[in-house]
Length: 328
Image (cartoon, rainbow, N blue to C red; front, side, top):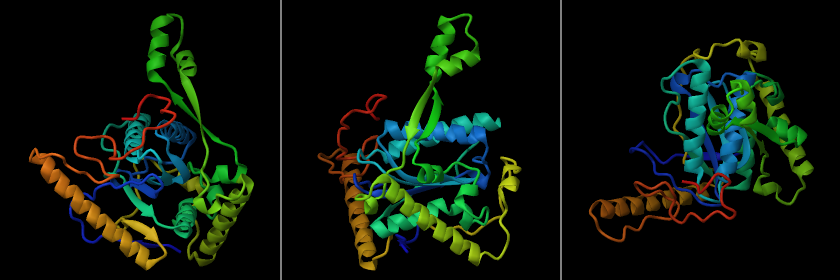
């Protein structure tokens, strides 16, 4: 079991601090907790296509993910220090696509995405199990396999890549201009690109072959789902009722909890990480002060994003480069 640690009362926006080997638990919620991710084939296909493409574009390794009706959880790592760019592109493209799908144009997310670093292998496994069992934790279904929304459960069971389809709109426009007799549907089909999305094994399972680590994860998830079933005091909502919900519905108000800075089983390690965050934040603030005063050099800490920049300090140059041009 991992134990979250909080930085304290909110003092403005917490700066992003990334490391190339860090594993991050990332989440965000829809505006007013509306069901903009409500499961359905069209919605699931839109999410998968954008997620698979953006993950490939920014070199993001995904360990697990689940999209509930009004929020998502992902466990990810990015050696290129481009999580912020990945999340920016993924969230913005997804918001535009689903707003168009639902025929709306207002705010899509509750706020900026939240990320917490995972400090140890045991906590990483715990967050993966939590991610996969989120539909069970919420008393929606008894097992992740029964969740009609998009999640990485199917990969853990089959080992087959999840193939996302993404429409290259620029290519579709080019085809429609070039060929007068081509229909919109034909151009869409020609301009559709496919991206395979595979889950990365957690560091704890690095020495196992693919079948072994997937079996281990399935067992862990099954054990947690069975435990939740035993503790449940009310029946699950069920997939049928979930699919019948309107996209602009929302659940009853619930109490919010602050986002933890880190997840870790060892209290000393958690405290040490919090102290490191404080020191890095102070260095960042001093660098911002020098930068605003025109002083040089403004020494921003490695893994942070200077004002006006879109790349982290110390971010490695991808090799090979991203397939869609230099990131950022």
